[in-house]
Image (cartoon, rainbow, N blue to C red; front, side, top):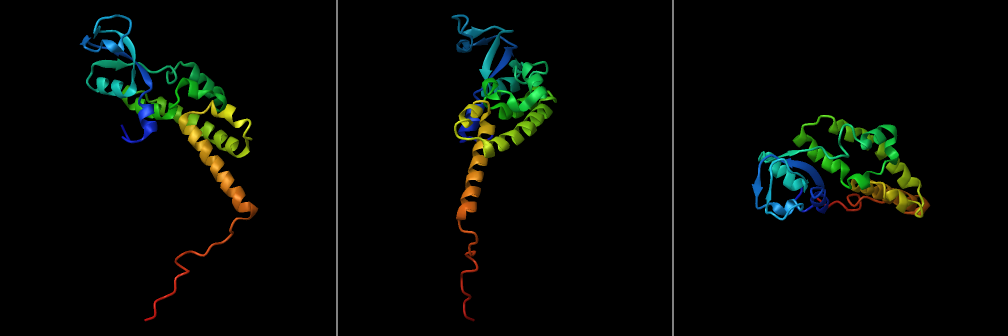
Amino acid sequence: MANYYDIDDILAEEELVPSVFQHNANGVGLFDSSDDTDKVEAGSRLELPFWLVRELYLRQLISIRVPPCFDRESKTREEIAADAAHVDLRSRCPYFYELGCKLAPLIGDKTIGPFLLVAFRIRYREVLIKAHTLTMTVAPKYLTLLTNEEAKLYEAGQCSIAAFKKWRIGGPRFQIAPVLGRKRKPT
């Protein structure tokens, strides 16, 4: 966990990741709701939270399957290649970029990094353009398409344009620096 107190980091690590148990495990039946026993058989496919998947993978108890939104043959990759700015990434994974960055080193898939970079480059520009131009009536519909990271960028863009407009309308143009306002001590 990168930041223990960051709620977004905690929520990103709660995202479910498909995995396959390599060995029988007793006392973990709560992960597999398909039967009433308190064990999971080897070869069982389950979706577990990322924080648990990372620990189990490092102990070589499970193998990780690539989540559908990051898979090489996925519909998500095709849609992003076609028009990344209009893909609904929030419905696929609300913490798309953060989970992808954490998952790529574990899986060893070298295509996830460049895929995330391409998606972010294209969507970043579009997010900032929309933050400066959208009206408040259209914005809620657009926000439903953005991941958590992109929504923060959108809000930062709106704050910056609001501050610019306030300054332009007639806020204080120049202010004296606090250092310049002090008088020198007589020597």
